[in-house]
Length: 522
Image 1: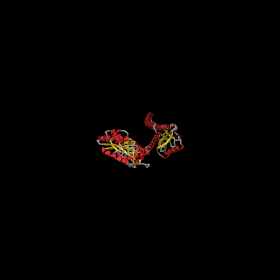
Image 2: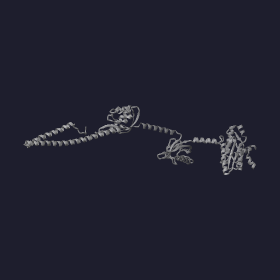
Image 3: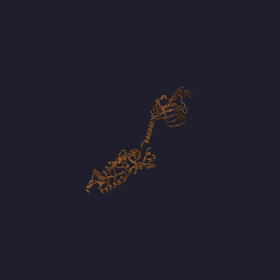
Image 4: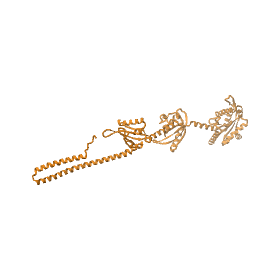
């Protein structure tokens, strides 16, 4: 082979040495004998000279042989050392192959320029299911791994380009069919390599089984898509924000647009507006304090507060979230939902619980609650409190003559007339049927009696025009009671005003009467 010296056989080299030795010996014997015989005439002396000459030849040849053998043995020793070194290198190379290539956890294979497999490690066996002896020296592995002809043609063209054109591939993903029929994803790194003579030997490919990773990525994408769909369809918005006074948003779901009127990108990093600016000014401090208390105590928080949307509409929202650890510290994560309809319903239900459904005035229960509060305040500050008890006179005739719908309309118009004819601090309530009460804080007996008389005259002078074209006139009887003159408790004060109203009715109706106890004391 080019670059290597021609090595002679041992027999040829031994024959060459023997021939040289024989030639030298013949020349020595023939030349030395002729020279001695020419110089020495005495036979005895000639014998001695011949003996010395022989021993001299033996000594010289022994010295030559010693030097030659020493050099030969030294060369053999070096050769043996080199052979031992080569055996050690071969053994280490074999161990490297077994320890690194065969036992590697990644697929390693080598193909020659004809696409035949020449190296197939254990990982390749384990992943593909095909043993080394099944594929070495053949090209059948291409059909086994890539049964689809079109896909196989694409893979083999790529392999040919690596060998012929020196194309290097990195993270080149393919799908193989294993011996067990399973589809696996393999990511390849491959390049060609050359021999000592500079000729292309083939290509080496290193493959990583990324099937599990690809499945995990697919599952993650599916979960992300599910999360995106969930956030897109949730009635409100999800958020992630910095725990600062501006509630600087790092993430806002698409529901932000419907909730606030702003697209998500307008709130992220306060690009257009900070979320705190949307919170009603009256709710900001409470919202901040409650959130910070929850963060310090490591518990979730939940709030109800008002937002002002981009269109200046005021809505109610419910927010729930908690502080979570983040690489940059702690952030807040949660959801915000529009509860305006619920709050309106609550307010409506609260109003129904407090108000008379026919007239919109406070009902009996709300009246007594107001009376308790005002009486406590009057007692605390030592101020008077007046109560007027009104009852329509002969109202049954209105119902009998015009019907109950007309009677209800009269009650509604009377309620509005009374509410519009008293002070802002005064409260009017309907406590049942055609009975009304007026609560007059900080008003004494004389002023309360004047107010009762004014209201009595106002009702008597008013004609209530009905939707059907009829007009109704009516009168009221009014009872007056004042704290602390007529009672110091709710029951005493209410009872005194009620009794005074009945006194007015017995006295002929359409009149005002103070509590009888007050009249007796006058």
